[in-house]
Image (tube, rainbow, N blue to C red):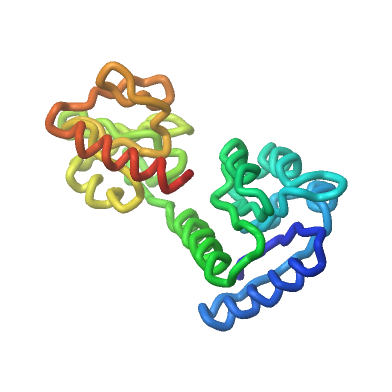
Length: 235
């Protein structure tokens, strides 16, 4: 079940979104649990990260959508936010609160279904991004969003994560085959890097949580291409 919040103060658009959601459910065989709010204040009050997707009008009477999204992001970094607006230039500001996308009024079903399908795809990818690794004396389950990069040291791999470093007996080739579809890319022979944690490219290195990881001449072009595509997708 996908938990969706609609934050919209205009009745005509609220009814239209309801109609579109029912149509999407029927066509795509999804199951939605929908909660309605008529203003940003209503969703922010007692918010507890209970939704998967929020469709948020930007211009509302008491608390606008951008302000509401800023408050939500303080407690919920995972919920997918899609803005609904009359004016495209307002939606561009959504990048500041990591909004996935925006829909411009008047809303067409095609535009709505495309954005919603993308949001569900992102949500599903997040639920699948867990792996287990065998370490000395046991097994560790990792959320890939907490894995910064993997470093090769001889016949060992070092998993650098938010919770510390883990040493694993494995090959870089095997790790790359396992994680390549989750936006991990080789920067050089010795590093497999989570593109989601690349802060910048500086002096021929990928900067990942303060660590400068050298990009080799042979792999730099492909790495930059994959990084650019990733940044374009998440923005």
